[in-house]
Length: 319
Image (cartoon, one colour):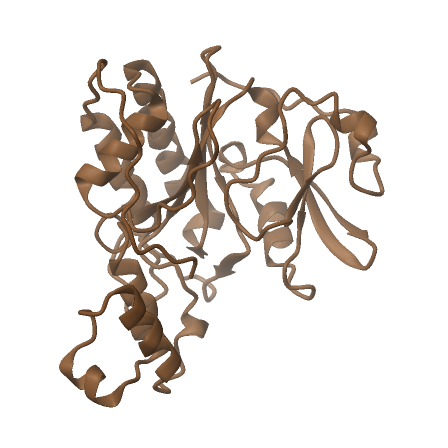
């Protein structure tokens, strides 16, 4: 794994608005956003980006990055610089990971067996709209009692969605990827089986064993850093991804990103990040997902002569 030193210019950090065309055109790569809310990111200069705070009043991600910069896990996340207010909106300015690569291949994998906050599913109200969404996605999914009620709870719907992807079994799901020279592939949320996962990963790494082993090594480092981090072990890590990148120059890297749903545990409590979740125990399955990816990359066999296409299962949905 090649070690990177963050390169940023004082010009970029002094900006009071998103970067001008003059600055942006000096970037090595065209701007790419694979996943997340459209328009949530903007290039701030040659080596930093702005990420918009979706909820105006929620500074969770800012606080997470501030704490991570002081934590032993600081080198498995993008470097954080500051929070910015511009035109009545708030942004965080962080390292642009694209700067380390030339025309990179990029993959976003959402990690964890639970992708929702406990606060989102505490309401036991039965909802007809969620039942209808479930039936649209998978007509055979509702149990007989649910068919009779024609309604389900938010918890039931969220767990159903996780079972539709690899999240429930493997603790991660492939959100999106871009192979250099191709358009992004984003309809991957129902990639579920091991065969489907392996097909996507082999396509992404272009069947290159050297890339596979570099990602395997980096994932092991992320696991070790996570386990020794006082911050990560004392927080629920929900909706966070690992961003994988490599290029034809031999550069590879992977970083934890997205901390807008990273919430602290009660004082003195820690999580295994591997145990099964039950309402109130806070477990998120993050390390379970990292363990799964390590094992998959270790055992992945890609044929050099196999020019695979990414097969995205039908019946995709953005929810």
